[in-house]
Image (cartoon, rainbow, N blue to C red):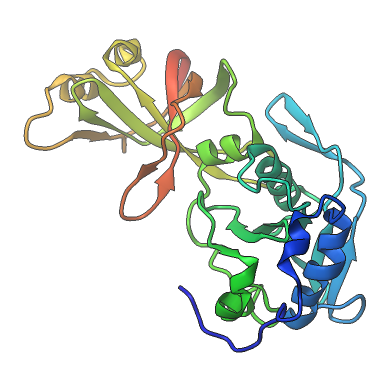
Length: 301
């Protein structure tokens, strides 16, 4: 929501400079980034510290056996009383902040094991765009000429006094994570012995279940797995016959759901990304995976 604020950081700045080909990323940092950071209360030393171009000891991000190398380092990291809080990447005015490569790179910094912050931002002198790692859309996006209107929102979200007060209670979606990492074009990804607590028949040719996945030692995500009627038949013998009978019933007035409380059923899944369309309900936004094949299974009483 817009919040009026009389503090105009750029009242003396000539915005025509953004169209000058010699006004590049270093100019954006010096002329535009610095005033914003100073106004928010960050500085080169003290409790609210700016860390510039920190080198990562292990510049890689992994998802299963796939590894992605980070080619550059984050422009700005922000530390609040010894705890990293958010990351900012500056771009030149000619760079499109909607370019997925910029988003992937900055997100990779935010989730990197040596950083791990909830917020990441992109700024090209024309726009400021702020994301939360668990949300698919920007939580703040404005043209720099309107900074005076949005400065209250900047303070509320990124001020050193409030930036660590974020709500981390909602689920982290694994499909969205893969998309942000640039891994959404994979041909297949295998999830070994994934637990199934319930399965829902959403429509005549759509079945779905969700499960926790752990792509690293510290991170836990929730993945949603969708599959069609043909793939559903592969569950025969992997879950109880009574569950198969319920799920074979056509969807008429309501969806058909089975819950497993007598035993823990695990299946190994081969999946692909289920298109690019985000799904949304009253509680969350998520990007489902499409099950190509149910492979092995196990049951624990």
